[in-house]
Image 1 (cartoon, rainbow over the protein chains, first blue to last red):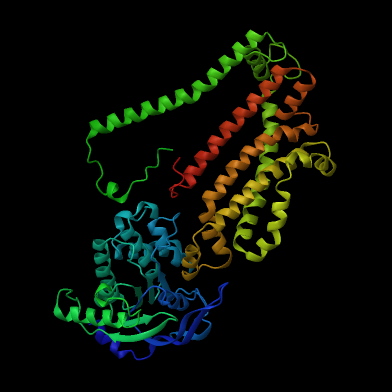
Image 2 (image 1 turned 60 degrees about the horizontal axis):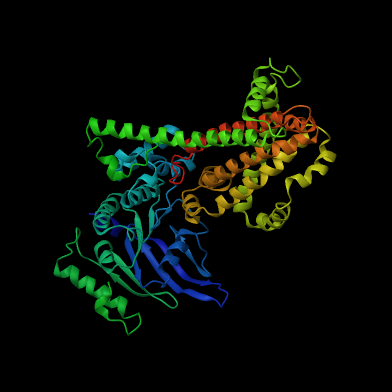
Amino acid sequence: MADAKRARISTPHVVIRGVTKRFQADDGDIDALARIDVSIDQGEFVCLIGASGCGKSTLLRIIAGFEEPTSGEVLVAGKPVTGPGSDRGMVFQDYALFPWMTVRQNIGFGPRQRRLSRPEIEEVADEFVKLVGLEHAANRYPGQLSGGMKQRVAIARVLANDANILLMDEPFGALDALTREQLQHELLQIWARSRVTILFVTHSVEEAALLADRVLVMSAGPGRIASDIRIDLPRPRDVSSPEFNAVRRDLARGLTSHVAPSRNPETVG
Amino acid sequence: MSEQVTALPEAAEQPAVEGDAPAAVRRRRRLLARVRAFALGAGFPILLILLWDRAVAMTGTRLVPSPRDVAIMMYDFAFGGVYDDAFSATILTHVWKSMTRVYGGFFLAALIGVPLGLMVGRIAWLRHLLDPTINLLRPIPVTAWLPLSMIFFGLGPNAAIFLVFLGAFYPILLNTIFGVRSVDTRLFEAAAMLGCTGSAMFRQVVFPASLPSIFNGLRIAHGFAWILIVVGEMTGVPSGLGSVIMDGRTLSRTDLVVTGMIVIGVCGFVTDRIIVKLGNRLLQWSPQHHG
C-alpha cells in the first residue's frame, strides 16, 4: 500500500550531487568519498552497505549536516543542506540519549526547542512514547533502560520532532539478535505508517535484504557507490524463502566483488 | 543515598516477586550494615581522642591541652559560664562570620567559574586565549596572594573572601572545563539536529551534561574554602573561626586553638554532607552518583 503512494511522488527527496570528502591527516590527506551522485525518493527505504572504511557513515553525516562535503552538495526537498536540521533525524548506534532526561523528556526535547506550550509538548511526547511501546518506562532515565529500549527512544525522539528523513547509522549493531529482529520489525511498521524516507547504514547483508527497497553497495578507497540494487520482494519478507536468499546472494556478491580479491565470498554477510 | 535504587529494566518489570518476610529480613540486614558503618566511622575518632588523652597524661606536657580542657573550652565557647572572657558564648557569632566569608568566596567562585568553564570548554578560541594563563596562575599558593590581597582589599573581611574565592575558583573552573570536554560529542550533535542552538545549547545540554563533573569541582572547592578561612582570617579581622585560632595562638591558649579547629572541622563536615545529598538528588540520573 505504501509502495503505490510512493510511486506517485516524483521529485526526489534527497539529492546527493558530486559529493566528495577529503579528511586532512598528519601523514597526508585521506579521500573518504570520491564523487557520490544519488537521488532518493520520498518514502524510500535505502540501505547503505559496505565494508568498514568505505565512507558510508561519512556520507550519512554529510547528509545530516554534521560534516561538510569537500565538494558537491546535498539537496533535501530541493534546498541545500548547510547544517544539522530537524527535518533530518539521526539515530546513532550508541543512542546518544540525554542521560539526565527521562524517556518522556528525551522524546519531548525537539518539541521543546520549537517552543511549543507545555501541554503540547506533553501530548507529543506521550504520543511517541506510545508509538514505540514505552509507556511503562516513560519516567525512567536512559541509564535504567536496555539497549533495545534506548534505541526505541532514539527513534521516537527524531519522529516526535517531525523528521521526515531518518538517518540511521548501524542503529541495531549493538543489540542482541532477538532484540534486533524485533526492532527491525517495529521500524518497518513505523515506516509503513509514517512514510518517512529512511537511509540506513548497515554492514549486514541480511539486514539490508530484509529492510530495504533499494541497497547502495559502497566500496572503499576512496568510498564510492559500486552498485545500486533494487529489491522488489513483497513485505513482510520471508527470510527462509528462495527469493530472499537470491537477493541476499546478489548483495553479498555485489559486496565481495569490490573488496580485496583474497577474501572468500562465502564468509561475507 | 540508598533511596535511589538503580533498578535494571529486568528487575523493575517484575516487582514484588519476593514476599514480605525476605523484604523484612533484607531491611533488617541493611539497617545492621548501616549501624556497623556508623559505629566504625564514629569509633575511630573516639579512639584518637583516647590516644590523645593518654599521650598528654603520660608526657605530662602543659603545651598541649587534654581532651577534657578542650571540652570545657568548647562548652564555654558555646554557652559561657566557665571563664567568662571575650570568647565565652560567642560561637554562633564566629561561625556565622566565617560562614559569610566561606560562602561569599565560594559562591563568587562558582558564579564566575562555572559559566567561564562551560565557555572555555566549548569554545576553542576562548580556550586558546585563557588556558595558558589559567595554568600559569593555578600553581601559585593562595597564601602567596596574602600580601597583595591586603593591599587590594585592606585589613578586613574582603581580603578573606578574596582568598577563599581564589582557592575555590580553580577546582570549579578546571572541573567544569573537564566536564564539558568529556561529554560525548554525539550529544551535542543530537541536540543540534533536534533544533537546539546557541544559548539554549548551553542551558539545556552543555550544563546538565557536565553537571556530575561540576559537582565534583564544587565539592572540592567547598573543602578548600573551609581550609582557607583560617588563612583568610589571619589578615586581621576581629571575628571568625580563623581569627579565634589566631587569637588563641597569640594568647598561648591552645585549648582555644583546638576548639576552633574542631568547630571548623564540624562545620566543613556537616556542610559537605549537605552538598553530597544535594548532588545525589540532582544527579539521580548519573550512574556515578549513587554514593
